[in-house]
Length: 217
Image 1 (cartoon, helix red, strand yellow):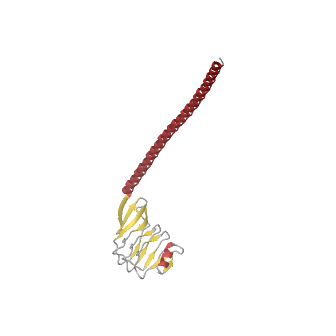
Image 2 (cartoon, helix red, strand yellow; image 1 turned 180 degrees about the horizontal axis):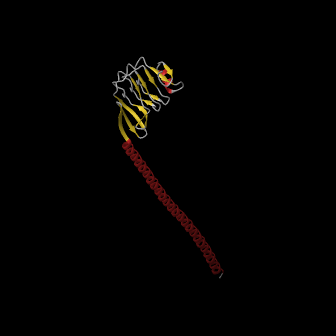
Image 3 (tube, helix red, strand yellow; image 1 turned 90 degrees about the vertical axis):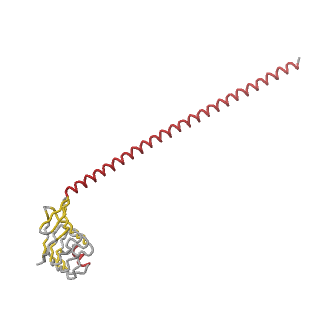
């Protein structure tokens, strides 16, 4: 009788232990499932976030490229328009044996055919200010001894008066800012200009005499 009671008690205890194990295992599995589910949800959210971010970056890049292309096209159209207007406004005019190229609001002296000893250039041609004397503009003007370059001219290009070997006096304006190499090759040249100007600095640089004034007295 005692053995039966002990056996029954043992089975009860064993049952309780097994039941406890089952409960603990179930809780553990449940917790694991929750953890795994949470991680899957978090991973999915990250993937969705990254995809949305990539889409936005792609759209932004596309927008930027489109804006850049639009700006480039606009700049090209503006340049073409400016070039077209420039071509339309460019013309050549010859006055008293001297040819000028007029481009918009400026004129360039490109060729002198005169064989005079004295030349006084006008400040304007066709109402447009003369600003440049071109390279070799006075080629062949071997008789030239005196030339008055007007106010407004800022550039004498290379070899502009290199062929004028008898040149004695040149009036240089205050507006002058640039004189190209070998613009003058006369070894007896004298410059007439104002003190403190680029013209005076040039005369001293090439070691030629200069006199202050507006013209030869």
